[in-house]
Length: 171
Image (cartoon, rainbow, N blue to C red; front, side, top):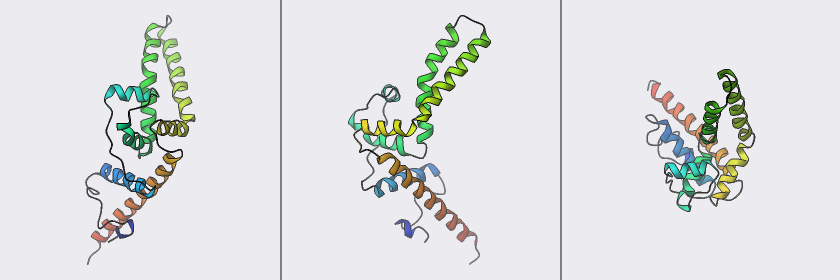
């Protein structure tokens, strides 16, 4: 009933059971709004993911996953996860090999780590657009899909609230 304006016959499957399914459906709806069908999302294996985290391009088979990775609800968390994976090995080496007291090593690692995470956060939009361009997607597609996904997420949440409120009302 409330989902008709979203172009759906009813609530998306799993709406009340699994919110991650709703998030994926909101992403797919946002991609359709951008004028294309949601591509298949093949996850890269761990070695390819490390290459991707280190700014390496992925093979064409993973284009859909790159689009999802850079435009899903968790795109910011994914960005920081990639940064942290790249920062941890040098910080570990610094903590183990720096010939000084433990407190100086800890302070050095903390300062270096915070700077290493802060710098990529300044260019988060440019970094995700670069990843999309590497995968062959047109410029400015990422922000457009992220905006439409946020709108669709809100519409799904509003429709779900209306459905729950309608179910609580006495008939």
